[in-house]
Structures are given as C-alpha cells and as structure tokens.
Image (tube, one colour):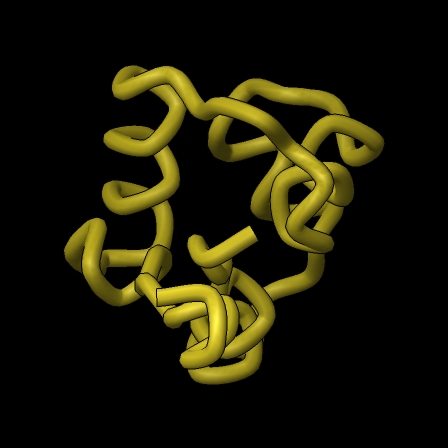
Length: 73
C-alpha cells in the first residue's frame, strides 16, 4: 500500500509506549498495532486527530505516501 504510517517514529521521538498512546487516544493497543504496522484499511479522522493531539504533531508526521512501483505507472 502506498500510504506509510510512521507512528513508530513519533512514539520514539516522544519516548512514549504503544500502551500509553492507546490509553491517551482511547483505542485498544491491538487496534493501534494494526494501524502502526500498516495493516489498517482506513483511519477515522477523529482517531487521527486524537493521535495528533496525544503526540503533539501534524497528520503529515504520521502518514506519508510512497509510490508502489515505478514500472506500474
């Protein structure tokens, strides 16, 4: 998938655990793991906003686009 989730980067910068972030955002650690490992198919804007508030960052700090393959263009 061309959308990459960089929650791990922000967790490291903020010295925060997955469990702590999940508590602050109000989601289960399992659902946060699905999101941070790139297995999620969608994310609610309310969840994205809560992640940004907890991590004191912008959505672009958590999500980025990468081309899948130059040959497929």
